[in-house]
Length: 81
Image (cartoon, rainbow, N blue to C red; front, top):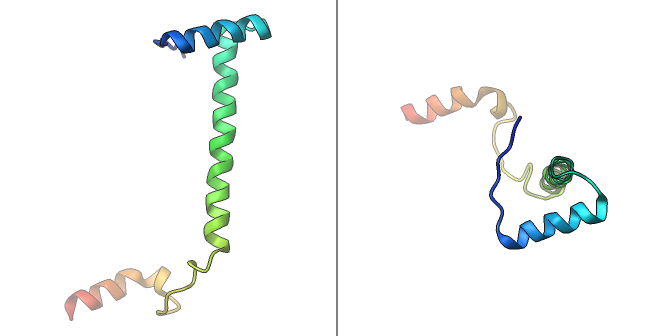
């Protein structure tokens, strides 16, 4: 995939400094930045799920034990009432 990006002056300077420090091309720096952000976001999703599952929120409601598999039946029943 070809990427065309517009950078403000501050980010342009940061990119130039990264190129000088790492001797990497612009393409390689963008690839590394994408990989880093992806790892951070993927980890964050797992952290959110772990936090939710370990909280008292999951399983705090009372209702039929088969609600997850029979929710349409219960919804139709309640709507008809």
